Length: 495
Image (cartoon, rainbow, N blue to C red; front, side, top):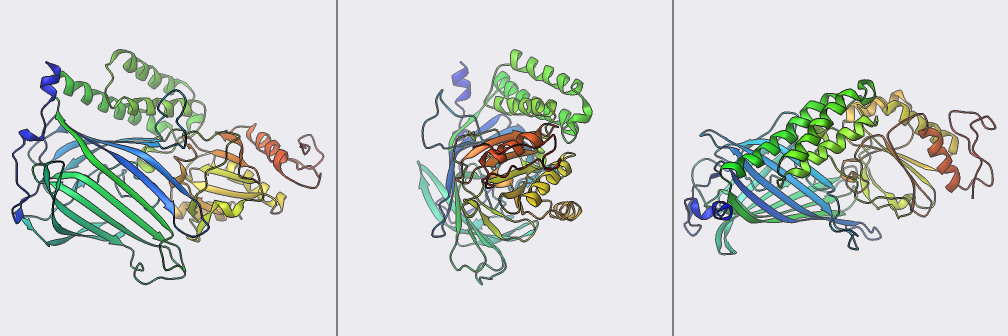
């Protein structure tokens, strides 16, 4: 009986042939409808001599919560899982990213989210909330070769064009092409990173949504003529079902519970040490009750993600904001004794690209931090003292999980930071940054030797001890920046 009720597909939606020369395209969604897309995201460096690539399995679900006449409320649920070279023991790896957002969609495919939530596709790293199934369409009918522009905050307009029709798995789709690029893409400069984004969307006329999406983003470093980095996201519609009655309520309840748990704890996350354990225990009790008494749905991982954040905050760590960073990334396997993933990032102050491979040959101290965290100043100050006392024998680099340029510049000046501050948003999956601050010690050969999450009185000595262990100082011990050499805090160099 349940199976019969679930097998309501897009065949029940009024069909519209893609063979006609004009189409009146608009999202056609109904309450309880769930569309599941599956695909992949991959990125790589293209510059000779730079070896960097990584890929993820991608799943995106669109679940219609409400369908009034003016706009439709949809839950956007995106899960990313890092592809590993070898199968992991024990089955599937934990998700690298889980994101659940509520948006509204109007009759033209235009999305509206909470002002604190950004739906902008990042130029580096995967989009943790995928909404490429929706294309903002012009009013009225559209025909072959027709073009229009979609405005986007802080970026050039995206130009769309109807390029034709194509048959995909028995569905005749309208093929759209969208192009967006920085003003200097066609005129290379020596002082700026240029980029170009190209979207191909096969729109199913009977849905008004994408049947298939391919998105390519190319970046070009300053003083280069050819692209130096490229990422490709592609996914296709796997199922389109409508869930009635209890099946709808189970999904809706879990989605709203996950959002409710996070909204309850969000004000506590920036300064968890000031709150004490009581408020976190109260939220954890509610989550535990939900997990034990409610039937699991495909959205259960969103509840577990909030649970992990609350547990991290209870330990005194500051998880990055969901609305700002997008999603509760979970550790993907970064561990002591393994080679640190290579990466390309951007210096947030100079806008220059930085490649990790150029740091090999000396130990590296990485710190992931949130500019708004109460512990940021102490942690960054500690790293600055290491930078000053090591005289270049250790590479120190900070990675901000929020690209708040004004605040970062202010902190850099106030703390007199002399090491680079890079963008850490695209590295949160790779380095498993669930909470900040997070410090990582890497030896001269690029192997991870120490991982330290959170900030406490013991963190300084632990990091210093690990640096002593892997630094070559000609037999001279290196003491913690907080004590004088030879004092009580002096730590000997160990082999």
